[in-house]
Length: 294
Image (cartoon, rainbow, N blue to C red; front, side, top):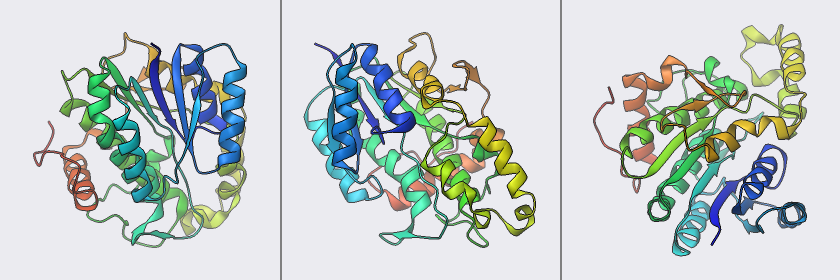
């Protein structure tokens, strides 16, 4: 029986390339996305390649209710070997989802909840892996996690980096929590590729703080040059993190497919503790400890 993998936001871009790579590596892949037409095309493409057959499950991962239903459905199906939380989103304008700011929901709360719901299936499928996709934008993030929203005005790029920083800290903390369980937890930095986010939202200067706006066109052009590669190359870190059994839990896999050192904030005990508290506040069903990691 083929090992099973789930890839969120897997109907296009880096997520689809990740799903293709996992299918070629012998996994029966479930791709998750909002759009059924894109999902059907993704499954058709995966199944046209050599590898295990794929399927599509529809879910809007910005809705925690839909994440809950998705997780319960997949968990009910039994063992799972790989979960790749590839979902991510940046918003030009502030948006609420069920009373919580959207960037934090999509980039942290949603994957954290899905992971928790699928832990029984991942334990049943052990040795297994959780791979959370991160970003270099964490380096410019505010490191204050008293609330889901950071202090100050809304700037999409910075809020995106902060939500991804929360998820990276949660990822490395979860790796410690699950040490010895048979479920390894890793992060993957894809670097970049041309996506809807880079082609659309990133072109709006208002997504950065006023002090950066004069320089933003230059910064953006440099970023676009660095993200002009194919999505297949950007998916390498996720595929390696999911399939290389020589990797240890709690590692961050960089764009070259090798371990790199995460930024210090991701392992700062104060940040980790604050992210734990904030995650439990919004997702009380997540059983994270109250102590501070060393």
